[in-house]
Length: 202
Image (cartoon, rainbow, N blue to C red; front, side, top):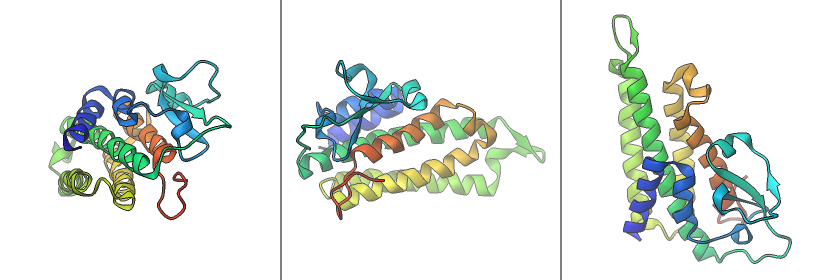
């Protein structure tokens, strides 16, 4: 399991969301999703599938597919394992976003010094490193627990937002690193079953 998580994280960091989504799903199709819509790599969408258009996701190579009327959702155990692998992919994307923020801030000057040296910025980046390591360790030791995996997803979503704010206006102008984490949250909403209801996240 640990090596699989590491592979998913590497794929997300190096190649992006769609590349990481393949090993995270491990062959699961739209019929396995816990909710009414599944997220799949666009290259893996079957012919005649009913799609939910999403231009931002399309730019990331991800498609949202309506679950077939006749389906059999994956078992809770399989969904939890899938969600843990997906969290590892998201971890890789968040690392990529943190690196993008460092590059961006290192090249900007304010008050005569690089923005990267400001205390608030350094604190945010330091907190991000800690949060990433906590997420990684949680997946390794508690990746079979639905509540723990769901919490990792929630923490990554919050961390992505904090890192995106460091990019200022460029974070909302089509930056690929930001786009990847935004779409990854939507993908997680399709696949992460919440323990209390057994349904996908809202």
